[in-house]
Length: 463
Image (cartoon, rainbow, N blue to C red; front, side, top):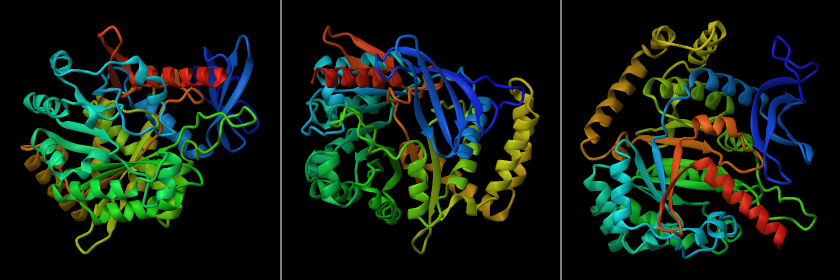
C-alpha cells in the first residue's frame, strides 16, 4: 500500500488521496482499499487477505477527480440524511434489457408493493421524496392509486419508466391527473441500433410516441441516457439539441454503462467509458461549451449549495446548467457570472481551512462568493428564476424554472469501483423493497446495487 508523506505525495508521480473499503473482484468480500493518483490516472488498490492486491482505474481525469474529491470531502458534512426513497414497486416488466441488473437478480426476490404498503412508507418517512421504479412501475395494476396517494400527502409523483405504455395518451393523462409530476424516461437516442444493443430490441418508435405525448401534456421529463462505448456516443449532441428545443424536458442524465456480462476469455466486457471519460465525450460533442473545466468549477459551487441547503449528494454525481435562449439554442450557466473566479474563491478558502468548516467559514465564503454574482446579467437571471420557482411551487417543484436544462452525469455503485466509506456517509438515496416474507425493507441504495452485482457475479460463475 502507498504511504502518504507530509505533503500528501507518495513519491514519484504518485499522490495519495484517501483510504476506503471496497469489494474483492474474486470473492466479493469487503476489503481495505486506497485511492491514489499515478501516471495520469486515479487508481484504487484493493488488498484481499486471500486473493491479494488488485487495481481498478477510477478516472483518467486526475485534476478533475482529485480537486472535486478534496472539495467534496471538505464541504459535505456526514450528518445529512438521505432525501430520496426509490421504491421497487413491482417485479413486472415488459422488457428484458441485456444491461438490467434488477431483472436478473432482484425480480425473483421481491413482491409487489401495495397501496397500503405505500401509505405506511409515506407516513413513516414524512420528510422524504419517493421515486417509483422497478421493474417497470407503469405495469403495477394500482399505479394510478399510488400516485394519487403521493399527491394526497403533497409528495411529488416521480416515476422512472421505459415509456412503452406512455404511447397511450389516455393512460398518460390518467397518470398526470392523479399526481404524476415528473417522468424519468429511459432514452438512448434516435438510433434503433443503440436500443437493440442496450435494450435488446428496436424501441425508437415507442420512445418517440411517448415523448410526443409527454410534450402534448407538458409533463416535466428527464431523459435517462445510458452511454455505451462505441454504441450511442454519436447521439450525445442530438439528444442535447432535442432537449434544448423542447422545454418540457428539464434534465438529461448521462449514465455510463456498467458491464457485467463475462466475455469469452473470462474478463468483463469493457463497454464503459469510465468515471469522467464520458464528460470528455460531452465536451467534444458540444465543441467545448460543456467542458470538463466548467463542470469541475460549477460542481465545486454546487457543493457549497448542497452544504448550505443540507442536501445530500453522492461524490460521483455532477451537474451543469444550460439556459434556453429566447431565439433558440442555449447559453451555458458560466455566461451569467465569473465561474473561474467562483472556483478560485472556493479553492482559496479550502487552502486556508484548518479542521472542520463551521458557521464562520460558511459566512465568510458566502460573502466572498456574493461578489461574483453582483452583476446586472446575473441578478436579472436570479430574479427571473426565483420568481418562477416560487410561483410554480403552488403546483409542484417539477414545474419550476422551465427555461433551465440540467445536464447531469452520474455513476452507479458497481462492485468493481465500490467506494464503501464514501457511500456509507453520503449515499443520497434509500431503496424500498417488499421481500418474499411480505416485509418492507429499507436499504441504502449503494448496498442494493452492490448486492445485485454480487449476485450477478455468482450467476456468471455458475453459468
